[in-house]
Image (cartoon, rainbow over all chains, first blue to last red):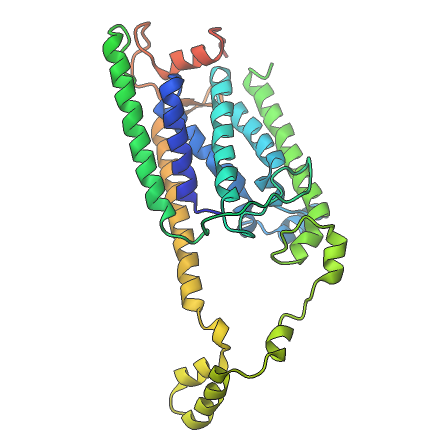
Length: 174
Length: 167
């Protein structure tokens, strides 16, 4: 999979671009999209709690792989939505979904077999494999993501400023 | 529904149990897949296991000795006890001598991933706070709540269909 910095910055880029159209996406809510981009990689918790340890505790076979599928991510998004006040629930759920889907999209673009996961589990166990064009260890992805994030943030701020100038009764959030 | 802290906590507990159930289900279905390292095909797992070759050294042993290996064996004979690094290099198969590149790449991925996680954690700490009484997260609102201001609270009302719900 791509590095975490690339994932979160691409999610931020998307959130900033969406904020041009949907003004309810504030910079603080854009952080939620970044958190959503981290959800599928919670399968890396296997390095903290190994499946063998979990199996010895539960007495059942355990795998962290479902975290990197829509099944695990959907439940994680529901948990995330319940962690916030009800008035933010829908916004948080939407942005967590945007972040998680951006993560999957980026992983699909990895050169196989790196990006080959059972994304649609538990609906189907079929692997989704696409011809990718970058490797998880390529070093150009993070700088590109940084440029995209800074560019989208600047664009969103300029659009917001321009809309504020045409609507003098509404003031800037930050 | 699920507005009071107690109900939200119960909902979180139920969902967490469901998530653990998914891990168990995945463990039951994916344990064979985990045993076949690097297998990403959509084929039936039992068939793949039957055809898998677990003798990882077979291909290497069957290869005729390469020029590198021959020179490596000569180096071992000639080096004696002198140059340990040359002996070690000669004993390692040519295709396995790129460990430095692989380790460097792995370290980079881990380091840059930690940076990414730190960025998210920093933005969360700066932009969000915990409401102890309501047991919920909410964005920090530095601006006064005013009808003319488009703050996060007004944003929340807008995304919630305009209805105001208290806890």
